[in-house]
Amino acid sequence: MQRKIFVITGPTGAGKTTIAEYLQNEFNLKKVLTHTTRAPRQGEINGVDYYFENALTFAQKHFLEQVEYAGNQYGSSKEALALAWSTGHDAVIVLDTKGAKTYAQQLGAQAVIVYVTVSNSAILAQRLAVRGDQPAQIKQRLASSHFQRDLAVPELAGQPVHVILNDELSIAKAQINTLMNARKLGNI
Ligand SMILES: Nc1nc2c(ncn2[C@@H]2O[C@H](COP(=O)(O)OP(=O)(O)O)[C@@H](O)[C@H]2O)c(=O)[nH]1
Ligand SMILES: Nc1ncnc2c1ncn2[C@@H]1O[C@H](COP(=O)(O)OP(=O)(O)O)[C@@H](O)[C@H]1O
Image 1 (cartoon, protein in one colour):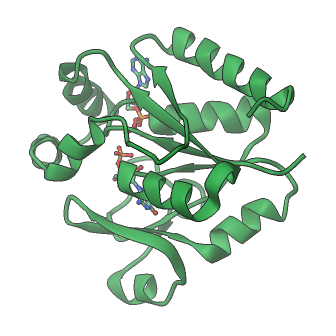
Image 2 (cartoon, rainbow, N blue to C red; image 1 turned 90 degrees about the vertical axis):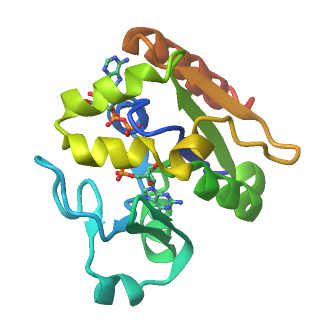
């Protein structure tokens, strides 16, 4: 069976990282770490959550795509993707919707696009606060055009987007289980 990469996208705070961790822990998907110049949050570890870079080291990578988000650089490198593929397992990556579109264009059906969302975007600010994000950063992030863009399901030419509603984590996980069952049966 051809290996797939599950691209987890959606607005900030929707639960993309949480869903990606579930896919890693329950379905043994290998995470493709991306690179960022943003400072690590409390508890984040270099080489586990991201490759944390400075402007100089960031410029030295070979990116499949890169974006600026809330004043920081983010990019997914060809090196990190190759590392995940080399394990022989399906891979998972967390991207904004622009990055998800690029992956869909570049990898076609090999990229499974999963859009994580909530029914009321007011929940997102609360989640970011609970996560420990600074109030000024939350304000800046939610005011950004990136955030507005990521609130909408990305439109992909001819490719499905699997929408996961993450109001309740147990229900979101059940939706992921259904998706992975379809994957196991070779239906995606
Ligand atoms: N296009 C793209 N987006 C990325 C990359 N790495 C992370 N992102 C996205 O950048 C946004 C900001 O990430 P982060 O600062 O970790 O905050 P988050 O929104 O809470 O996950 C999120 O939508 C991430 O999914 C990347 O390499 N490329
Ligand atoms: N269904 C949920 N209900 C309540 N809190 C959640 C839910 N899913 C995730 N969270 C929490 O919300 C915060 C944001 O989740 P996270 O996975 O970091 O989102 P993202 O990667 O999309 O920014 C985290 O503290 C996470 O533990």
